[in-house]
Image 1 (cartoon, rainbow, N blue to C red):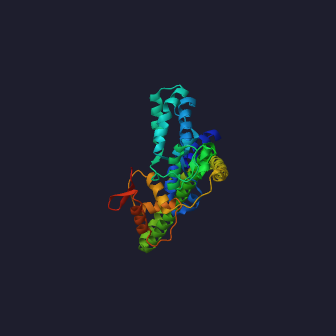
Image 2 (spheres, rainbow, N blue to C red; image 1 turned 180 degrees about the horizontal axis):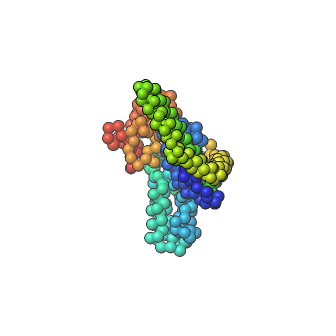
Image 3 (cartoon, rainbow, N blue to C red; image 1 turned 90 degrees about the horizontal axis):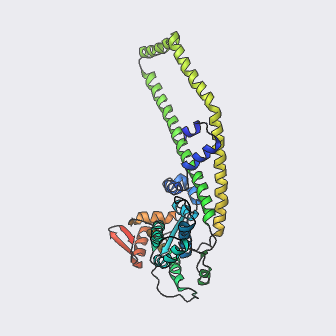
Length: 374
């Protein structure tokens, strides 16, 4: 960051550099890093992460864009970028795989590609999703317009998450629904939040190390001075004589003065660029903060009312997104990060009882748990 600030670049180049330093993809890593430092908890609490059960209509739209509308094969949709940034966490019932497979031939035909190409793209999409097998099997006492919607309702009920869908039929089933397309606003938010978090995090680390280095220098200077005054008088006089000799000797004095002038002149020449870049950086940071706040407000307004989620709901969502078994301590930590709170004195013991009672989890080895796959 220091080298970046000391180089005089045009504004458009600096913008590109800043975006390359903190792309939206970095938001996920920045979130994880911030979770490890309690000092960042106020910012972390404000940072949005949207968990939802994604409907087939959204995934079909993503596939059709990739196969038909996309010109550059490296381009990403807003939905894809939001998932890779960690802003969107998309969970789907296992049933979605069969539903997409059923329509894949029609999608390929409509978009003018082969079935093999459609299947290859579907495989890529699945890598960014988390699949969950609902335990519910009883048709609820509600109006069901399309029975294919039931797995999504069951997943929503068991995970305590809203459904992200363009299908308004879910409302008749009392399913909390995200019916507004969030993708574009969410992408703006992810990009602004990444710059805001990145600059905040790295600047804090830089300042912390600078202060620690200065404090270390002061401690070293104090120690050297303490050692110096404890030295025998003749050693102190000898050291003072050497320093005086350097200052008195014309060539030595000239080199010292020349070195000081070089440092001063270099700083003087560099100062305008440094100040200019710092001013620009502050402006970009302020812009990112404003965009982050505005888009965060828009996103929250578009989300359905938050419902109370039980411990088992939180545990399911944590395990469904985990790639490996978790200890009860790690499970508790992740649940609390995701907003769960408990007054239980022995929370780990409570979690153990909840996992065993549900029959949905498996203790793969002593102390390590995972979600059953069938």
